[in-house]
Image 1 (cartoon, rainbow, N blue to C red):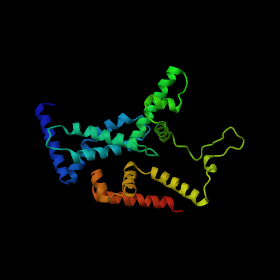
Image 2: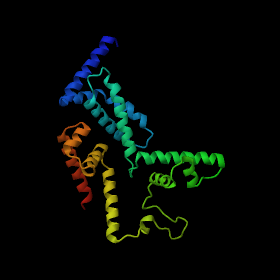
Image 3: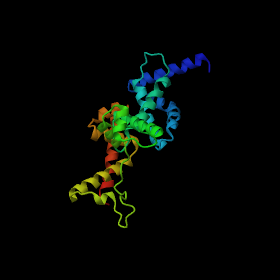
Image 4: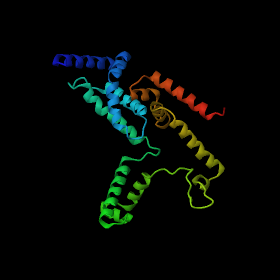
Length: 249
């Protein structure tokens, strides 16, 4: 492709971006269609993370929409140059924040440092270090290290057997000492989380923004780079899906 053709292609793209930023839906849809291959190529980098690639593609598409919305036409750079880090950043943010329990970045970093210090200590001394020894190595209070390791530990299943060697094995759920009402609340919350986990990525994000971050439909639309009508339709569809799942048949 010669220089003139490249320049013409770039100019057409910039014109489409301008029209999209001015609210022209057709221009935005055309830009998305032209860049779906780019999104897929970036999504494939995360194929070993244990997530469905279609879900990651939806997340990457949100990054693409944000790129279209935020691209500054004053700068003479190719749109793809700007879009790639936006798309990758959106995917990485989803992977970081999609855990069952949200853990702050500082706690994750501290836990990683603690594990590295533990491994290094074991290689040198041939035994596991105590919490105080890790604290001394990192010069960080032992309480903070313990909290970071606990926060990053795997979530225990309520169905996990806690005494597998016994003839009368029981599960963790059977050991919970709660009143009947409190136990009901626990299992209702778990049931609701299981239902929400069946939603698509974009549906889960909208429910989170709407009912956990208390954003309006317009604020969600602006954040995701779509119309308020689309958010309203998705929200209505999700709520109907949840209602049908919860109500007895």
